[in-house]
Length: 207
Image 1 (tube, helix red, strand yellow):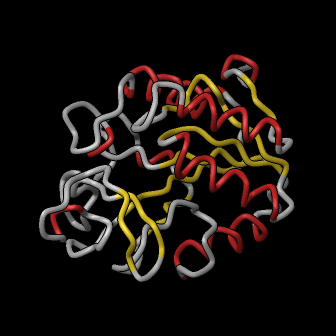
Image 2 (spheres, helix red, strand yellow; image 1 turned 90 degrees about the horizontal axis):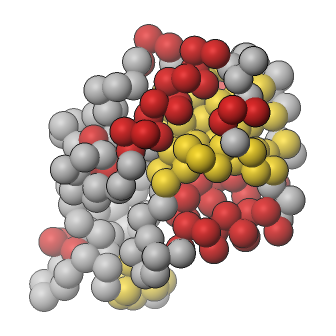
């Protein structure tokens, strides 16, 4: 049994969004093709819903700006532009994503103190439900695509593997923010490959 996990296909990561990532239109086309043509037993989308006062937002700190690394409650964290705020247009799914094809939406509402990149983060009750849902559906294999390769996708894929799921990365449908260097995404993919996660091209899944 196989599940396709669509990671954070939300307006703020798309064209003209607060955290715009290049080539989301191309990535969405691949996602739609897989949803229509590949034989997945369930299709799941994750959706961030940040509180507006989240401490990872640079605007919630005096004299701070996005991409600074600061200590919050003793933990070093990157500061972000305000994005994917609960109930906002930016938090909504991109228009090209047909929600009627989704079997499950995992709402990633998180506490105000720290970001949570993995959709398997058991400190969050909504995310913990993902593990239960996959087990309930007898899912053995999970396939990831979406954004951001070096954050949510990497952490989620590693957690999926640790939880016992055979884990795959649809490499041509994963996009990186590349905030530090132009090859952040490639470094993340190499890390996943070294951890034993299987890389594949979307065309390998279409029959």
